[in-house]
Image (tube, rainbow, N blue to C red; front, side, top):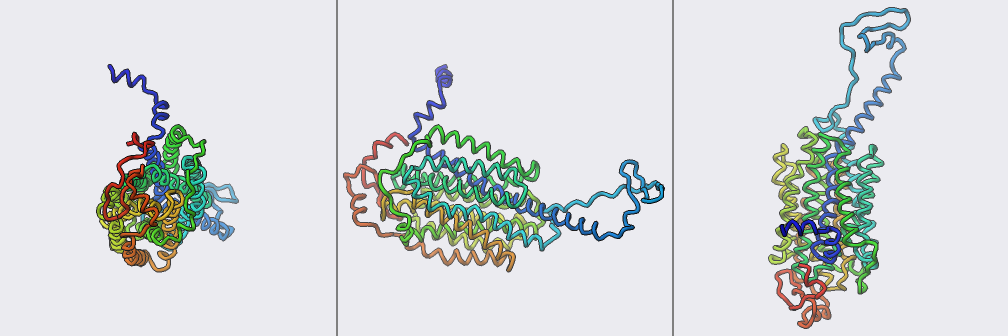
Length: 513
């Protein structure tokens, strides 16, 4: 009875207000925001190539029919078929001929995802789909440099909530858009919302979790939301598109986005402006830091591989495997599952084995796995290379995202909006250059050569991660962090291992765990 009474007296809004300053609740909000953002990012992967191919095929068939109608001789329509009583009536004299043949049926477009008939049209789709997929990352790339400094001035809550609002509008546009132009605008608008959500979310976590190992674990959990979005998006989109239609998956995502927006509104109170207590290092100063650039490059080239696969693999499968619609999304399932596993495992393990080593191995495995993709002869042959790609990218992201915050702590002012704007810029460069360049390369020299090129680039970049093994820090910052009287519990900033430098936690966060 006691539990029943407690359940009756439980007030959700009161609990949310009491838990407002909880780090765990903030982590959950960021987790859900990244989950929805990346579900919307990847749910279109199996839908857009097939949908655009259907639109183009229908348009081309309509043009052919119009051309045939205009070129037909005058006497070609002397007889008229009546669908009412299956008779043939001749124009001119009032003569009716009874026909035993069934009436002709209009020619319908071929199923665009099962053995498409036009290879030329498929090659053209590579460029169109690549540009549409790249538009989101390109817009996000342009917006990020403004969002980072903005979070330093107004705090993280307001940009995070603004990202939700923009994401909701983009999702509704995807649901009801029926032309390439509107889909392109919806994808571009999503880039603005993603920039707000990812930069503000990661900065908020880095600010709340001051301990280096805890920060790595928290960011690993948040990246798990990203991984789950990538995991659920393609199969969810392909199955819903195959059996329900294009609109349904986007309406479901819009409903889930409303839940996250309500949670943000009650917990984070986005109407309040909460600027940082100290002025952070400028964005341009951080961009000149070679160690931050190496870490950002690892994020960029690691994710560029999967970014190139997203627009080109479904079209290659349609061309070589006669893949059905649901198979276009399910093909990415091994990569999504392994990414989720990789981010969860290496969120903590990367600190012990060395984040630089984790990233080096990860980028190398990405390169080898990508080269193996074109050797697949069926959807089952894609399981192993796609699993390797996802797992390795999980290694890279879960080690490089925390190291961006730790490099700021060690070498600059501990304000994180700008550095995670750089991290998101690197992520977006991979997803902007990957689809746009990948679609054009795939059209000109073929999908196998495209995979070989990006694989070799990843393998050649991997050794640069060695420079992150023991980056130097500013002497005055090292002295502060090593001070045993420092009220903040920190850990030594070595990627090889950790040990406590202070015993007392800031009382503001003592009850948050």
